[in-house]
Image (cartoon, rainbow, N blue to C red; front, side):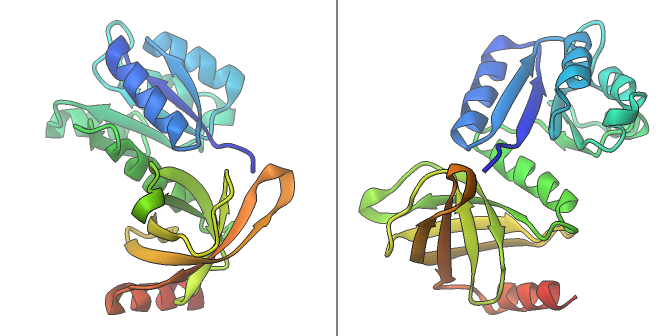
Length: 225
């Protein structure tokens, strides 16, 4: 399974390393930049799938970097998220006018980044019918959160394309946004099938065990639309 590449730009080295480490653990390939200018140059050369920009960078801030990226035809449709510790209406308006996909408050916890990235990528995946899934194994074999791709979604379960094998019978905690919507689904699922797929990925059949009636209705509405 080819990794999704995320570019992060933040002038604070500590936060940059924390964000990089957590996204790498989540299964993403990560590029980093410490300035807006560097972010624009890397984006031009490497064509990431998603860009995360800190607004508060010296010289060229996140909004200016976003505006420069949008002038590149190859980056015109790339999802760009601008994060800010000061989410004022003025900052939000400026960033949206610069062309960002979304303006968000800078996460207080590193694990919140996974949710933001998964949600933004889900909006881009409607046509491909692929779903970005954040999951972890629960119980005695509990694991950290990682990111996989979901397909063949139904109200009963989904096929999860994971970066590593998962034992049949394992119980997963699963979170994902339905592509093209802001509907977040949270559920537990039992692994009922596990096999090696293409390109070294692992295909895992997951059966939902505690899907709420509301989430079941959202999924049914999505798959039949």
